Image 1 (cartoon, rainbow, N blue to C red):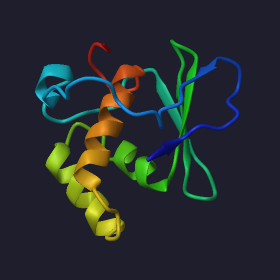
Image 2 (cartoon, rainbow, N blue to C red):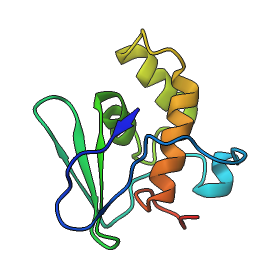
Image 3 (cartoon, rainbow, N blue to C red):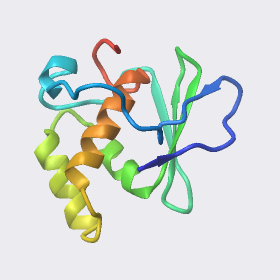
Image 4 (cartoon, rainbow, N blue to C red):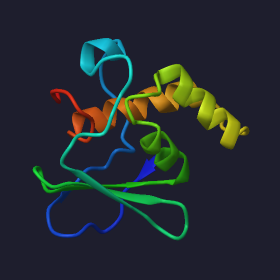
Length: 119
C-alpha cells in the first residue's frame, strides 16, 4: 500500500516490506482509534500520493493514494474497522483492505508517525 521515493534529507523507510512476526492488537500499540503524532507534517501530491515527514526522526514516507486515505483517517475518530470501510468505499476493487490497513497502521506506528510509543 506504500511506496518509497527519493526523500528530502533524512532517512527513508521502505514500508513496502512484509511484516515479520505476529500482529498485536491495535489497542496494545496506540489505542483503538489511531491518530497522527504531533510532530508529523504531510503534503498531498498532485497524483493523490502523499509525503509524510516525521520532524523528530527526520524520516519520510511516501504513501500511495490508498495509503494516503488511511493516513487521513488517522484522526483519533476512526477505529480500524471504520478505516477499512472508508478504503472499501473509495477503492472497491482493493483485494484485501483489512489486511492492508492493519499492515499500514503497524508500519506508520513503527515509523513514529502515529501517536503513542513506537516499538
